[in-house]
Image (cartoon, rainbow, N blue to C red; front, side, top):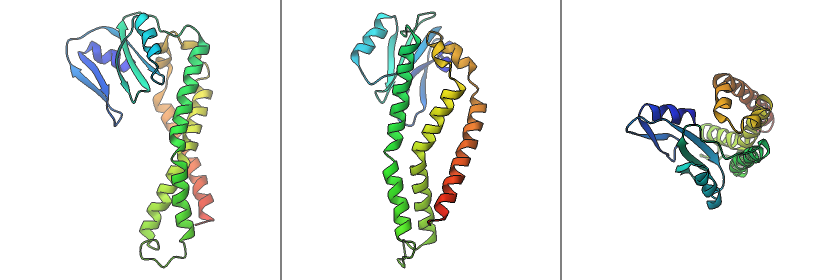
Length: 203
């Protein structure tokens, strides 16, 4: 939201988020607007609520994340911390479920490597091929766990986030992206190392 706000002030207007997850802007006249990015699963009633509150829908990403803009100081649509907490839980649940679908694929790759460790087949017995299968299997299996760790981390570090339901920009200013990235990278390395040690005994 803060990024879209700064870009608009410089004359770069948000167009969309493309399929690769990158924001696309178009050059135009500078404008001072507030922006809102919300998560919900495509309810037309939800869009009406935003419109009646003074927010204009300017795009969406995969019918899950919706982008809005309005005049400065337009109130957010969340009227209490409980409704904002429900929104957060829905987003995290969807994120977890999206990653969970990779779990059976990862397990299949790992089982293939395990069941063919004595294979004389030119392909399945190739060290390079087995390394790729093992890496892919590990990554796809650990993804849901990684998302879970990220969610738990957010709940601990930003446990008071719901207090900012009316002023999300203040919450944005409190975030320490570099610190969070470093901590999550370390946690990810620890999880990866433990998982690798576990796999070592089987493969």
